[in-house]
Image (tube, rainbow, N blue to C red):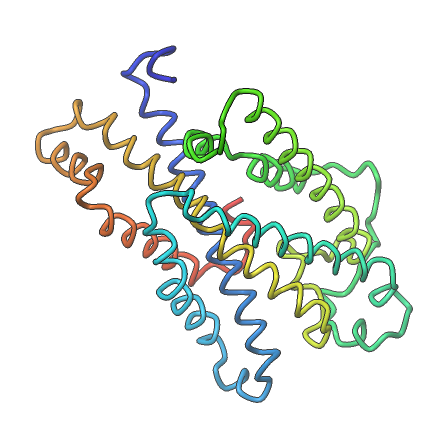
Length: 296
């Protein structure tokens, strides 16, 4: 579309932007996977967690990348992963139900004296000292960036449309309305209840605020972990396709040796090496990243 309307000479711009955006998305996903499943293992084996220390998160992330993410990302046809969308949606809704429940039952309300609240470190405990309905500062840029990232799925539109049963423009429009409507309601609910629970102390990954002994939160972490695992291939597919498109766009204008590399990257014959290389890069960075607000 860019090449048709604005010229083939600058088609690499949009592919480059999508490559960066999708790579950051996979980086965020990998970081969350490491955080959530390390927390779950710590809850399941509290005696062994201190001994494992910082290696627990790295080991969990590497193991899940090798055994779960790699096979899913190697699948070329997204329609074969249709079941994961249902699983992921159910998991996200279950997480939302937990957050709403805790916002309503007062378990983390300041002054409640609950054991869950007492177990939180000071930096994660609810704080509303600077609360203001109209407070807008530099931190708002993180929110705007999150919202942009949350609603961005255009890079996978061709794949989604191709896999739609009985596809037509009207049916596609209806799917988009339902999907974005559900997301808008879900995001607004999670933001509102998350702030009502923890105020300014709400972390980039809200589930990190809940007490390790909170059984409902443990379930929410598991549900979110599952949703991230099954949703990972969708963001990765956007990265994979955009990088191949970028190489195809740049190849004619590159020196011979670099053009050969670009053509090799975009070749179907190198599908597996490209998938493994991209996964390796995202995982390597996620091993050192502790705050998902950084790439956002």
